[in-house]
Amino acid sequence: MSLFRMFRSIQFKLILMVLLLILIAVQLIGVYFISTMKNSLIDSFTGNLNQNATLLTTYLSDSNLSTTATTKEGTGEAGTNEMLSSLVANFFTISGATVQILDSSGKVLATSKPSQQSFVGRKNTSLLVSRALQGVRDNEEEIIDEDNTRSKVIAKPVISNNKIVGAVYIVASMKDVYQTMEGINRIFVSATLIALGLTAVLGVLLAGTITSPIKALTRQATAVAEGRFDERVPVFGKDEIGQLSMAFNDMTDRLSDALTINEEEKEKLASILSNMSDGVLATDELGIVIVTNRRARGMLEIPEVKEGTTLSSALGIEKMPIAETLEGKESALLLRRDSEAEDDLVFRVTLTPIRRRDKGVAGVIAVLQDVTEMEKLEQSRREFVANVSHELRTPLTTIKSYAEALDDGALEEPPLANRFVGVIRNETERMIRLVTDLLHLSRFDSRRNQLRRQKTDLSEMLEEVVDRFSFQLRQKAITATVKVDSKTKTAWLDRDGIDQVLDNLVSNAIKYTLDGGTIDISSKMNDTGMLAIAIKDTGIGIPKKDLARIFERFYRVDKARSRNMGGTGLGLSIAREIVRAHSGSIAIESEANVGTVVTVLLPIVPEGSEPS
Image 1 (tube, rainbow, N blue to C red):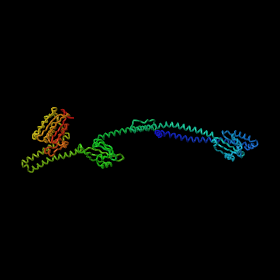
Image 2 (cartoon, helix red, strand yellow):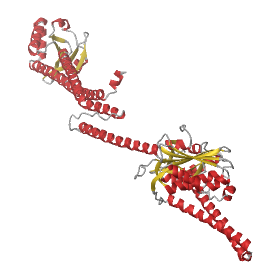
Image 3 (cartoon, one colour):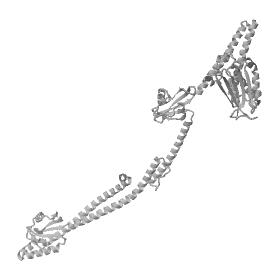
Image 4 (cartoon, rainbow, N blue to C red):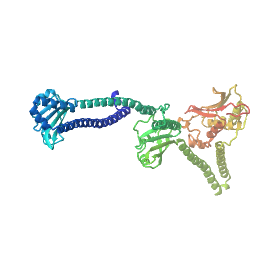
């Protein structure tokens, strides 16, 4: 596998490309050079052979070969052969060449090769000889003899007095020429192999200067892909690869900075989403939920959103609003959900499309706002207005009715007139109490009610409360007791405000305690270091379903009975606001037909200071 990977590397490809280029160039040069050298050697060899053959024919022509032949007949064959052989040996010096002198009929007169003396007197039937005896001067060819040796054959006519008197037949071996060519070929092949070897070595070195930076770039790119931005590509020069390395290092730095900024923004966004008071859900272009924050999961009471959950199923609404939002339309709706611990929860869901540049709507963002308290406040406001209107309309209607009766003649009857005037007076006082209570609440709501703290004897304050209600207590035969802890006898309080709180609580205790019951008023320091004033009665108690709303304005457990007793439904609300102004709290514990305990907790304030 590693070998296959090496063959696919750029370094191998560069070296192979250079070697192929060198090999092709050398081969082209070698073919041209060897071909030229071969032709040159053969032409030189052939030219030298022709030159010697021409010289011999010229000499034989000048010496009149016909005369030599006649002499042959007169002097004897042995002397002629010796003379012509000597002539051939003197005029022809080519190594390994066989020379034959022929007469006009093609018979061999002499030969330069001793082993061919038997050819003398025989006729040479070579085609080249026939052509030469016919007067053709350029007769040559290459032949391969029995021992596989290539030879050059030349036949030239001998002309004397414009008459062909014979011919010269030369066979010269070209062994030396081809051995020279083979030597040149070996030298060329050796030189080519040496050149390729040197080229390969230089190619490895040169390719390394190119592939090493590329390998470094590859390693750096892999490191960047794995999130490691601390490594750098070495820069070996200012060439193109060096510039690429510098550009890659610069890109790595910028990418690292960009990713750092992106991570910071992502962490900020995650932190914002996680700590938002509103719930957020985001979907993709198909309406599938892809992002939720902790608040949204808590509001929807789901620990986690499963993969593939649609926004409509997560919110429990129809698909139409979400489909319209995916088409680019913003919308808002109210979502009501049942809650086991509290009343129904009300959420305002705002659906906004996520838009991408040149890609249209890419998803939906749903923002959930808990408007339960706002709805409760709005409901309370409506109830408050209705209650105030009702509370004022009833005495006003009564006053108007009795005033009209007096105007219609009741004034003429003193007993009836006095009774009507008394009713009008009572209803007027009721209206005055109601308006006074509303003014008190208005001051507390606007925080304009100033506390006037003074050192207060707790025992004295509680005894005075009992004294103020002694007549009502005697009327219903209710026994009232006061108990003050000896460790806390005094406290810095707004005496008038606390008196109003205690009067309200004791008044309610008397109203709802049956004849012969008991009311216990106590004061002590509790475990948290706060002053605890408790009013305990044995009255009819308060149903559990009403305890949570008992401090609401105009709220009455038994509306008809409370109104007949002269209550406005604002006493406990005013008491709570006064206690809150002291940085305290008020709590009620009650059980039907058993009794009620109202506990007021007030911080112990040192003389001349205010609670923090």
